[in-house]
Length: 357
Picture 1 (spheres, rainbow, N blue to C red):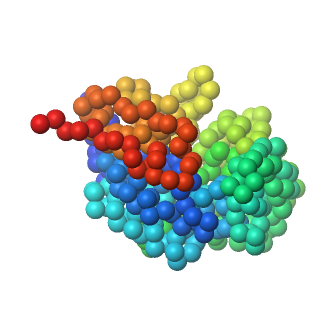
Picture 2: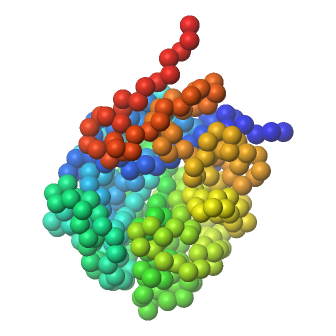
Picture 3: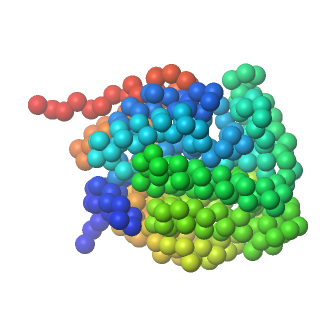
């Protein structure tokens, strides 16, 4: 029997009304205290037609903040706003996961409080520029290498963020372990040059990820935890010469955890290679991501490479994306000039398709 993107799907006991997922997307609409804008309530409410909404990357501590105007989930003010957002999505019949992020060395001091540190597995600066509101493009900061005790503290920050997420009504959490952020920095040999139990061999380099996911799964169960990964990505100065060994070792080390899903991004010319690789090593739910349209998304779930499909810029520009897919309608085109600007333009003003009489 053919599976449709419009079919329901269960992640554990969470029932998704369709298999069309809203991908996490940085939008840079928060304030300097990391509180999501009040516009974010409407932004997420508009897109609650997705089977699952996954939020933008949200820092677990101010040390984990990197970019301008990104939200956190570690202060009462942040929690209050996120609770308003989850209520809005649930009122529309949607489900929502919080993507928890710690950027590690992918940061600049001008984008976070003066008391916040920039940390990483090793004291190796990323050879990448970052935008700051205060001074434009700047070189990323030189990070401090985490001590063993500090690694435990960072894991605790993730756990507190996960507890906070459930306290304000999120249905689950997604660990952002891709795009060159802290978990990926532990995996990659060019960013992890430690000689203790968290560095050196690949079996040591996966330790942080395994311990972190074990801790997150202990909060409310593994089925409420998803994992975002980007094998083969070189973004943010990541250089892993053998990503398939890295990720096959990691996935083997995670076999004892019944994760809710893995959410890989396909890259390169042979775009289904990453998805088929993950499928070889993980028998649970896979969310395919990366340049899908409706027909290619439908094909990907029918050929078994994934179970759900996430859409980024298409959901950004089409808050009613599911209905447009159902009707075969023309899609709005996203405007890159407003992806990260602070106002409502390109955020909550994309038009819905008018219903015909």
